[in-house]
Image (cartoon, rainbow, N blue to C red; front, side, top):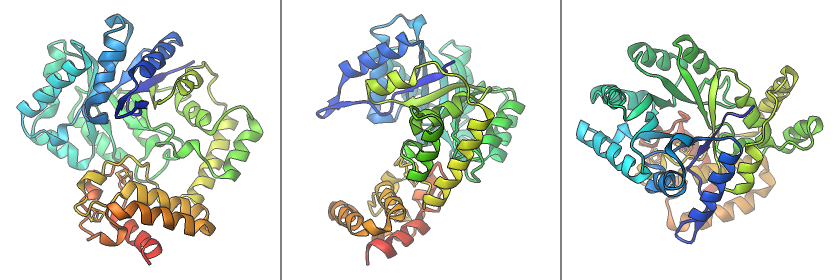
Length: 363
Ligand code: SF4
Ligand code: SF4
């Protein structure tokens, strides 16, 4: 059993560019292992994720042997022309005639309002009718109630890309479990992203890792996280943003679904992590470009979480913080405008967190 999809958002670099030979090798290993689903986005890696599709897949493989899912940034498109331009650029950059899956990227309450205002679901439907997209839908960062509202208003949607992992399964801001139920209710296919929660579930507190290793000494925490999502019967594809050949080789191996006991163990691990993680930031960085004070929000929160896990290391964390904020904004520069919060897929009260961090790190 393997439902692995290759997320092309963390590709290996070579100097200022990307290591296309290494990416091609990863693609070959992925496809040799039975994988054929690739996920890209107009905005990932400044367009290089799309370029990877062309250079490493479309130019080297028969079109019928792979599937590509593209995400369009509807939130920054204020007309049909804008969205059409992104779509045309994506096709050209990816070197494909059609997309197997065409999604609006990152629907939140704010981005859904933009999608409605500019009739972006109609745009998707037209692409599907023209044979330029086989299936249409959106990637989603909101709660189950809003998802229900969207799917009721847009029965034309075929698929939803949801954030699913064992830590967020019952989390109030994400509601992975309830969102899956909602998709099931509306008969939609589920694609899963963030199975390892931006790497959070690959590096666990010692106590949590010990618990997992006591059952399967040879499984890494990331193996457990990926298997949890792949074991969900309704999930069609589980995306993993792989950046090295070793990750592809580890992830593509077939495996048995988790047993009930193994899932219960993960829920114990979840409780340990929740006790241990001060701020549930995935480090995605979506908030950062929108901060008028140029505060490297994701990096500062990461440091704060590290400090929370090991308060005795405060001097090390503070040194790293000082170094980082020599050239970028400090937590104390925050003016509390909350612009960042509009872009946070995790719905975090960022301004509040930054204030807490400032009290710890700037004094
Ligand atoms: S609330 Fe603070 S961190 Fe967020 S955008 Fe405004 S200044 Fe930046
Ligand atoms: S605060 Fe939110 S948007 Fe910013 S990096 Fe963390 S999860 Fe991403």
